[in-house]
Image (cartoon, rainbow, N blue to C red; front, side, top):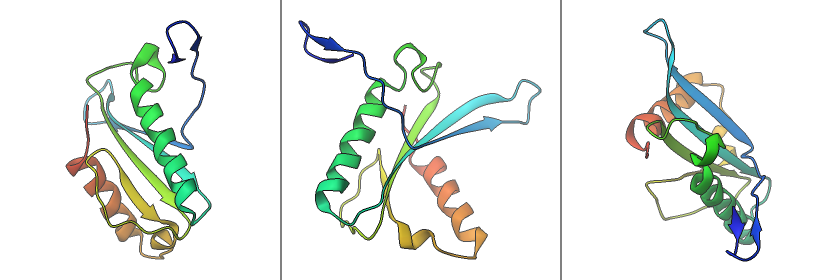
Amino acid sequence: MTGTDKAPVLYRGRPDIVIEIYDTSTSDAELVSVLIGEVKYSSSAQTFRQGLEELATYRRFAHHDGYIVDDPTVSLSSFLVTNGYSTTGTADELTHLNGSELLTDDVEVLRSFATDLLVTRPTK
C-alpha cells in the first residue's frame, strides 16, 4: 500500500526485469536470490531519478504479500540500466549500468557482472 493512512493506494507496478536464482544442487531447487531491474531509455538525470524511485518502491514492497518474493529470507538485488547517463556514486542496494556497457560479444563480461552483483551485493 502507498498513499496515506486515510487514502491508501494498492501499489501495482512491476520491475522491467525479474530474475530468480535457484540452488539446483538439491532436488527441490530452492529460490535463493531475486534480481530486479529497471530500464530507462534516456540519458536524462530526471529519468534516472524516476528509475531510482521506482526501484526503491519495488524493494519496499518486494516481500509484502508475495508481491515479488514470497520468502523474506530470499536475498534481493536491484539494478538500473540507463541509456547514456553516468553516475559517480555507489549504493549497496543498487547497481547502475550505462546501457553501452552491456554491448559486448564477450559473454564472460556479462557473467562476471551477474556473479559479482549476486555474490557481493545481495540484501535481505
